[in-house]
Amino acid sequence: MSTETLTQRPSHERDLLAQLTLRWGRRVAVKKDELDLDGHFDPDLPDFPEHLVPVLELPGVEPLDRPAHRRVLAAAWIAYNAKTAAIENEIILPACRLMLEDRIPVRRDDVSYTALHQTIVDEHFHILMCHNAVGVTKRRRDLGGLAFDPRGWAVVRGLDRAREGLAGFERDLVEIAFSLAAETTISGFLSSLATAQDIQPMNRITVDMHRRDESGHAVVFRELAGSLYRSLDGPGRALFRDALISGLAAFRAADVDPWVEVAAAGDLRIEPGQLAEWASGRPAPRRDTGPLQLLLDDLGIDQSLVDAVPQGG
Image 1 (cartoon, rainbow, N blue to C red):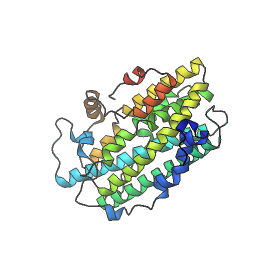
Image 2 (image 1 turned 60 degrees about the vertical axis):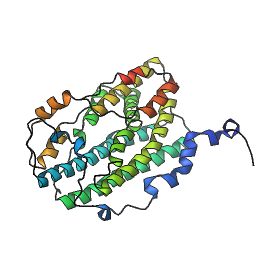
Image 3 (image 1 turned 90 degrees about the vertical axis):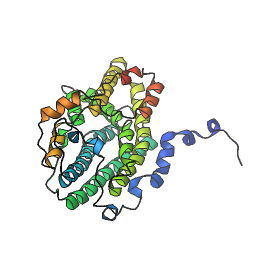
Image 4 (image 1 turned 180 degrees about the horizontal axis):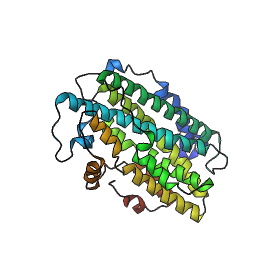
């Protein structure tokens, strides 16, 4: 049996993207049997972790009775999925399609083409997973009329602000930088739900399947965004770094209007200003920046740029 070292192996065996694409059929959610959602629904368990629902922590809010409390947690789960789908639709998928365009100077070979299309398939399936899980929750919790504006989330509005007035290649860079912020830092938040043993099994398992896929997407975006950054001139690199920082800040920003809708599902009436004032004095949950830091090290970008990103909204 050969004892060759890793550095002696053929280049395709040392290529992270190549290894990832070869394992795609064995590791991703879209290739696995679909989850029996109703079979994993327990009506006696909450749909979302209470400590992740800010409207339940507002000063002066009266305690809710059990049915109203459960409706708020169910609405929070629906909101989480609506935000996830909005991020996939408005930020991740457009960036994937951009990196398939010849005008974007990312790594351009069969492996990167395959990796991007596999990621696109994954992300569309994640949106379908969100839709299916929400459908069960709406039906079982009688919340069929609850819906959220895809452009009502802070991160989507943050992208709109960051690319305002830009066109062409500069706009493309901003959109890819935002997607990099998403795909290399999302695992921490997903883990908080994927490991929550006291919520719906259906919800926990759905999020865990998503989380496992995202670990691979972090590698894809790290590799391709890294190749893009290396090709840029000084002003292009500065624009990309600024957009990456804006993206990280937008992902950490507090959402207001969607949480007002979540509260209303339990007949809890709050004003956007109440929530905004409360959120301004609290740090947002930290996101796992480990995968991003690997890329920053590789590109020679000072990690203090990331560390300085505001934590709150």
